[in-house]
Image (cartoon, rainbow, N blue to C red):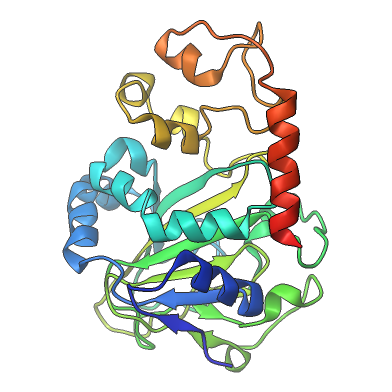
Length: 290
């Protein structure tokens, strides 16, 4: 089954509906390719310094460069793309809030074989989340054209409803072919994997930005990845998305029940937050998921 496709005029509700149905969707040319090229230019020294992966899963001809909030001002803009956040809010709206999970450029080099088809939510110690209960929503932005030759990500549409621990052959997957500036969105339960780069001299660059419900641990430690002196100057919405916020009632406060953002910026608020507001928000989230 082909991957659902939209153009940049799509709404978050439309994309979220496709994710609920197929577990994945592509929004073509959501940003100008120059935006992602600027991200790559800002990250150039870090990309060049990143070693290849140590095993076949991470890729022995693949570089994975993280810490993008600290290293790339332009990446911060992509992280808060309105269509993406609207979509993520609907996919993960059953939880009180969601947060940034990881930021990473995945550079698949020539000669890299296809990655093992997997579910990203296996990172949570292979916990068997109930089918249909999504805890993670991912984006993979095409910094360069994603083609069959250069290793377009392989996905199995509809597999977010499949049993766990399955194995797939390449011919059972679909290639997420898309031009630079496009984005593949997929849930943490979707079976997928990096494609084989069969080119002679082309590197496939993808910008992987993922989001997770706030009661789960982030894959990339955002508090240490971004130095405090940089974090203090970032806008509040981005900071809260990074995790400088209570994840739910009584979840994530600091010492004497202070709000994380106040601690970062020298504030003095206290308390768990409002139980009444938290309960009301949880009830609204439950109604949206019915």
